[in-house]
Length: 194
Picture 1 (tube, one colour):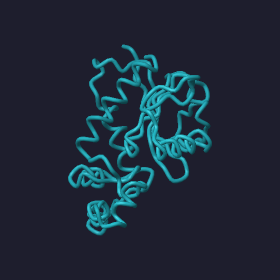
Picture 2 (cartoon, rainbow, N blue to C red):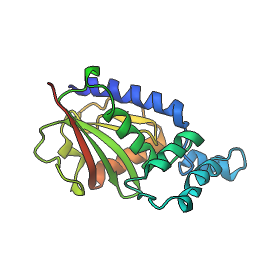
Picture 3 (cartoon, rainbow, N blue to C red):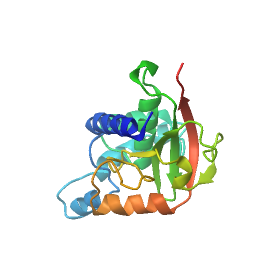
Picture 4 (spheres, rainbow, N blue to C red):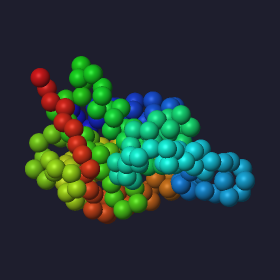
């Protein structure tokens, strides 16, 4: 699967999930500003997501949220990067294999302060098989595509001419952080051609 095909998959996933869970997260710059000015209220729905913690014994973690957090993210249409990264991972992972996702590894990853997914070639030597191995973005190969629902962003970090969404200032900051921080893989799933 080429990066062009991965871009199409990323775009379709982001568009579908943005409809389901809302466009803005409470801890993004835009929401912080409009909430502080009293123009919007993104914090209350996210607080509802976190309010279910006392009713469950399994809260999950920031890097691996429990299923009830994901359900509340969809129900309230708000969530932060950890929940949105998990939605991307599960959405792509659970696609029927007949939908053309082949010879691709999908990684659920994080950098300090942010979680997202990466689609890459399945047989890259530097992409870990086990969780919690730290890499740089170049280890994911030239055809890698970052899929970031929190920023509603998808892009190719390792091509000489970036493909994907045109970044605004906030996206540009996070893209820079992704390119310049170690990346830890939480888990991965490989789609192979049968």
